[in-house]
Image: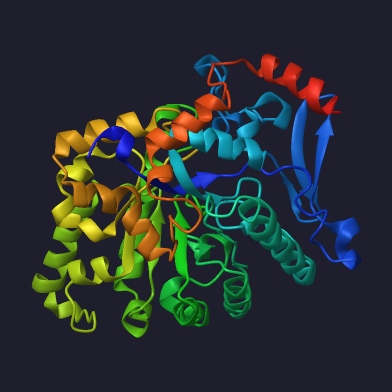
Amino acid sequence: MQLDEMILVSVDDHIVEPATVFDNHIPQRWADRAPRMVFDPATGMQSWTWEGGTTATPFICAVVTLPPDEWGYDPSTLAEMRPGCWDVNERVRDMDANGVLASMCFPSFAGMAGHFFGECADRELGYAALQAYNDWHIDEWAGSHPGRFIPLPLSPLWDPELAAKEVRRVARKGATAITFSEAPESFGYPNIHSGAWDPFFAACCDEDVVVAIHIASGQNVMPADQEVPLEVSSTLPCWNALPCAANLLWSKSLVKYPDLRIALSEGGTSWIPGFLDRMERQFHVQKWVGSDLGGLTPTEMFQRHFLACFICDPSGLLLRDRIGIDNIAYEVDYPHSDCTFPNSAEELWEHIELARCSDEEIAKITHGNAARWLRFDPFQHVTREEATVGALRARARSNDVDLRIRSKADYRKSYELTYGSIS
């Protein structure tokens, strides 16, 4: 296999939501109370606000094709970022330019697990807004380009029974995955050892829906002292997947629900062999604890239940046999600061060559495992030949996709010419 022959499905990208999210989906009785995007000319800040609070997306979450000296945690505006961050038609053009066939997208303003909707004191309104978001995501974002997106709705974290109900609702709309938090207890909700989430897990098994858990989807505190360098706080979140996996692996729910499948989104893979070594030693040596994994070893339990998702993890590819070749999936992370756009294929290929992966292994890592776990048919709308990195990039070249580095000011000028003033 050559680089241009790969077929890439990214199981972790992100939407910076446009202002129209709730326009067509919130019931009329709630329309005046739905979250809305507002712009403050005094501060130049664009935010989502409602009675549940206010939140903004920092530029570090929308940096593609911005010069590195303009990256940072200052709040972003749609006008100052690449349109592919928030415009689905432009996103598909960017996917073509990057050689990516399909993408599963997590939210931005709503939080990685949708906790923003749980901040509303009026739970009925919160659920109505969450449902409206999910319908927008499934029907408009993913539905606008069949075969290019894997829908990823949000679960109402504040109520396990309601979360189960939403699983069944979105499954009827074609969703094969739903978000969840790495630490629901950090929001004041039950932890997974309580058994409270069993209705949610049961619904996911019944509907064959994958639980997608993104790093930083809880409120676990990272070092925040002023003397702690930014490098520390930006490095550590990826390791959140380890305690999340440990809690899930030892929870009684995995024994109770053997068909439950969990994607550890943006968690990487290189930590997994050492993690499994420790889990195995705990299981076989510390017998006084009385661990019961339903007849499985920790490694068998991990490989039954977990999909490990990585952006750039050459050590993980070298140790792929210890992880499980059927348990690894690729992600781009567009448009966040860790993303590999527009050279995702080149970076991945370099690491694939280093690890000496076979063609069969490449196919599984790049798209096969994602397709199987998420029940996604990459070739339902295109032929295999049309789905490759080379074919998609050829189409992008013919459509003149601009990949130049451009400043926020340049993007703002283009935005105002096309859409008018942001204010």
